[in-house]
Length: 388
Image (tube, rainbow, N blue to C red; front, top):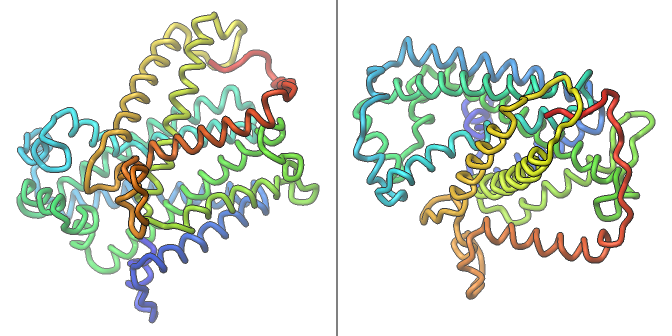
């Protein structure tokens, strides 16, 4: 989004959309988000809140613009069955495959609730407000996202079947060609809104990762944590953890195979962690947790929601593991660009390879450093009990 936005401003910038340019923009973005996290929570909050307003207004306003001025399809198109959705590659003619592929739309949206919970330590009355923030994030994303997707489908020019078939064959992606119908200034404004929203997402995800890493390093669960788990007395932020997370986030740029592949691999690991966490929570529920009165409680619905979360998480893991040749979804290592001959290892999908590498490194670290380490006494919350 940044490259076409800058090229379209007519200010003498003409960037080539290649790997080098993408890496440069990624590095600049990463440096700026790391700096924002170092220089204070309030600054991050201002940027984040501004970006969220841009995103909500932008998505809603442009959705109505598409519906009012660029409607080419009847709303009935949403209820029509199209042969291409079943037989188009790479889903093998399987309705189940099409359904799982459609679920990929919500992958990155659902991740937003984790940010609300990770930043709970910086929230007033978090045991009441954090769960509400999670629910608001999911409900808001569902309503706004569905509205925009509806508008995008209504704005598809020409025959819907041919349009999607051309896209599957390698034509321009639907959102791009739909946006190109707008006047130049409107398209540029839309790209600016989307770029701002993506930037804020990067900032929020990095912030939540920093908070999570700081919590683990504070408890002595990360390697060499005593060297970077301190909070600055002047800036009141964990500068060492901020820098560490920034450096780790830059490692994939050393071998860059495309933003899509990086995002899919990272998101797959996030969903694996969700799945494992839900197993632990369900075990605790079956043993009677929570046992104390809390500000927010699901009651008898807790176990039902927990089981549904496991079903959802399992479906998404199948999604990541399902081989789809010719797509960015879980390609084998040997299919990545500029990779030397890896022999049998080259046939391992990138998601499985990532999981395997983390398990090996984690096991070695546990064996060497954590196996005999003393347990850290948990920090008790201000309010009694635990959110269920």
